[in-house]
Image 1 (cartoon, protein in one colour):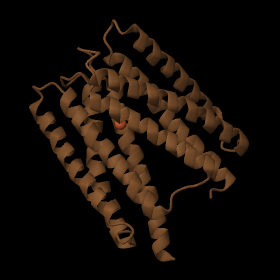
Image 2 (cartoon, rainbow, N blue to C red):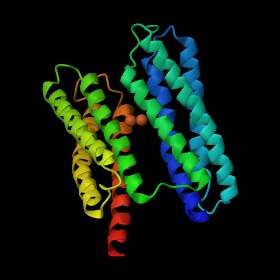
Image 3 (cartoon, rainbow, N blue to C red):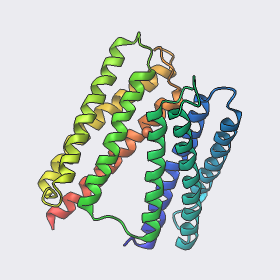
Image 4 (tube, protein in one colour):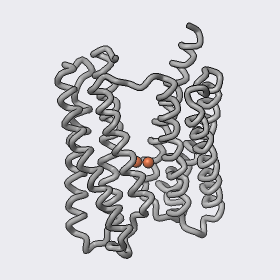
Length: 268
Ligand SMILES: [Fe+2]
Ligand SMILES: [Fe+2]
C-alpha cells in the first residue's frame, strides 16, 4: 500500500508524463490521416484538447493535494484514456481492413500507441486501488513492456528515415535487433518465474537493459537534434523524435528506481 502523500506524488508524476504523451499521439495520428478523413481528424483534434486540459490540470495540482481529489482526478483521466484507447483500436481496424488506403500511420505504430494507452490506464487503476505489484514481478513486467516499446521505436525510426540515409537506417536496424533480443531474454526470465526472481539475476537483468537503453537514448537524442537542425532527410516530425527520446528517458528512470529498491532489499 502507498502512503497518501506518496499516492498523490506518484499519481501526478504518472499523469503529467503520460497525458502529454497521449496528447502527442493525437497529433501524430492526425498527421497520418488523409486530408479527406475529416471525421477522424476531428476526433484526433478533440483528443488533443482533452489531454492538453488534463496535462494542464495535472501540472497545476500541488503535491500537497487532498488524496480524495487526486483519486477522482485519476478516475476521470482513466475514463479519457479508455476513450483514446478505443479510438486507436478503431483506427487500427480501419487500416488493417484497407479502409484508409494511402494513409501514413503504420499499423504497428497505431498498435504501439494503443499499448501505451493501455499501460497508462492500468497504472491509474493500480494507483487508485492501492495495489502495486511486488517488486520482482514489477521488474519483469515493466521491462517486458518497455523493451518491446524500445524495439518498436527503433523500427519506426528505421522506416521513417529517408532510405538514402543508409548509415542511420543501419544503426536503427541494429537497435531493432538488439532490443528484440533483449525482449526475448526478458520473456525467458518471465517464464522461469518465480525461480528466476533472485536478486543477482534481476540485478544483472536491469544492468544489461540499462546499458542498451542508454545507447538507444543517445541515438534518439542525436537523431532528434539532427532532425531539428534539418541536417538529415526523413519524414520524422521533430516532436515524434523528441517523444521517443522522452520515453527512453522514462524507461531509464524506471530501471534506476527498480535498481535502488533492489539494492535496498539486498542490504536487509
Ligand atoms: Fe508514445
Ligand atoms: Fe512509444
